[in-house]
Amino acid sequence: MASLKDVERVADDLSNLVEQLRREIRNNASFDRLVQLADEISEHADEAAGTFSTVNDALMNRLNEIKGGGSGSGNTRTSSGSSRAKART
Image (cartoon, rainbow, N blue to C red; front, side):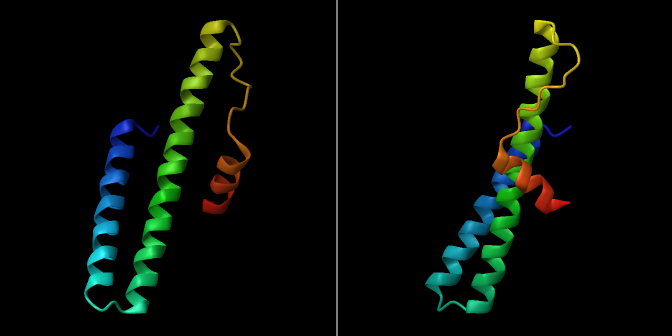
């Protein structure tokens, strides 16, 4: 299962990519490089969203178990989270 440490790593990667994007823009950017960086940022953002969704699902399932739901059948994922998960597979 994904953890908050995983999210922190993804956030650090995103931060580094944004800094690279800023440097590229300041230094007469190559549009090819800007596209590459934007793609990487998008992939990392999707990864972060997927990680948040996984952690949320695990927490909600655990809360349902504690409340007596036991089966964990409740799906708390939003439609946007579902589409992101489908897009990654």
